[in-house]
Each structure stands twice: as C-alpha cells, then as structure tokens.
Image 1 (cartoon, rainbow, N blue to C red):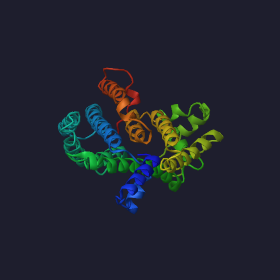
Image 2: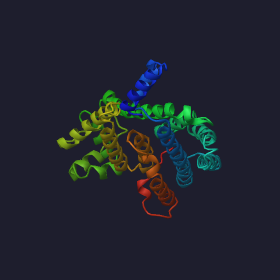
Image 3: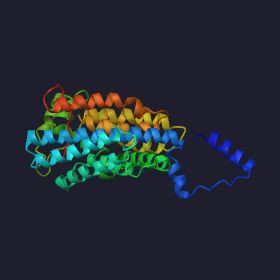
Image 4: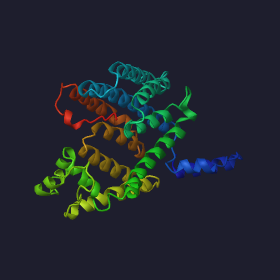
Length: 323
C-alpha cells in the first residue's frame, strides 16, 4: 500500500470515527523494507517459496553429484534421502492448499544436510536455510503472516549484503587488493576473471608462491584497476544495502545489487548461488518479478543439473560447494 493510499484510508477512517491503530516501533522498523498490500505480499511470498524449494531441491541433487564425483566423504545414500525430501517439499509448494507444508517438510532435509556437513558447512547453505525458516512462518491461512514474512526476508537480504561488505572492511585484505591477488595466485576461476587487468607475468608470479609457507608473497599487484575494483566491491555492497531500505532508491538499488551479485558470482563460477541471491533481491522491485522469472530460473536449474551429471556442457560454471 502506497503512502497516498494509507493517507486516504486514514482520512476515511477518521471521517467514519474509526480508531486507527498505532504502529509499534518494531513494525515501523520492519516497514522500512516497504509497505505492501496483502495480495501483493501473498504473491511475492508464494513465488519466492516455490523458488526457494526448487533451489534447495536442485542444489541437493548437485551435492549428490559432487559427492559421487569427488568422494567428499559424505554418505551418498543420506544425501539422496535429503534431496528426495526437499524435492517433495517443492512438490507440495506447487499445490495452493498444501503449499504451507512444503518448507516444513524441506526443513527436515535441510537439517539432515546440516548434520552431515557441520561444522564445515558452506556459508551459502545458511542463507538458504534462514530464508526457508522465515517462509515456514506462513501458516495455513496466510493473509495475516505474509507481509511480515516478506519484510523479514527483505531485511535478511539487505543485512547479508551489508555484512558481506563490512566483513571485507574488518578483514582489511580488500583495501590494497591483497585478497584478490591471493585468489588470482591460487589459479583457476579468479586468474581467468582478472586476466584482463593483470599482465600474464604478474599472474605467473602470484601463482609461483606457496600459500602454505610463512611469508609467501607479496600478494600485491601494481595495476590500480585491481585496487579500485577491490575497494568498490565492499563500498557497493554496504551502500546498496542501505539504499534498499529507502523507498526512493529501492528499485535502482535492487537493480544495481542484482547486477553486482550476478557479476561477482558468475565471475566466481557460482551460478547456483547467484540465482538464489538474485531471487532474494527481486521482491525489492515493484511487480511480481519472482513469479515472472520463475520459469526461466527453472530452465536454468535443469541445465545446471544436466551439466553436473555430464548431460550438458558448462559444468565448470557450477560450484555447489558443500564444505
């Protein structure tokens, strides 16, 4: 509901002598994420619930493929059980009357996966787990719950985005580009990503260091573009998280955040997580974008599954890390 609509409703209630309930401090705080009509909130949450469980099901089968291919030390049988349970939860989310049961069932599969991988569980998994936990708060009669859940999901997304930038500041290895230089020195995807900015001899120098040895390095590069990009990443992450909470800049901040996350995660070859976080950002945009784009993400997930099992090309773009 827009401010104009709220004011009109307030005037009509005042004329009718109807008392207008005061919004509590906590409600006002959550309301910074936006004011939504109950039908709008219902549509956004419903589409996001279906996506989250689709994501969990696909990621679970990718984990199984990874465990089988690389002998990750995890039970393929238990991973298959978890994947089947989460897939069943996704199936329930497609039935309107049973949709609220989907995330509840999926939590059992997620709990099993957490038990199998803890304490070395990949941090991306916790983003998914927290989002599913919030969606489980929607009950059988959802109208009174979904606005609160939607705002909670949006706040969670903004806080995660802000924390990723803050973490980079606190660690201190992004100010001079040390971390990016170190990752380039490890080779693989980061070396390929920054090949446009770092000369081949510099990349060879960074890759010649043994990171296990004390005083290996220096992990510095002379090209200023690397330092600029390194600092721009955390400045954008923290700044965009704040702008997501301001109505006038929310849509632009959401589009910019989607672009930033896509570039970073595709550069890191983490397509699966990129799709998860992009969908968590879509509710910040006006309109049912989660619903509109869900079929396209479903096709992308089918491709990811096929690539992981060797049926389609592009397996190098998928890194569903478990540990």
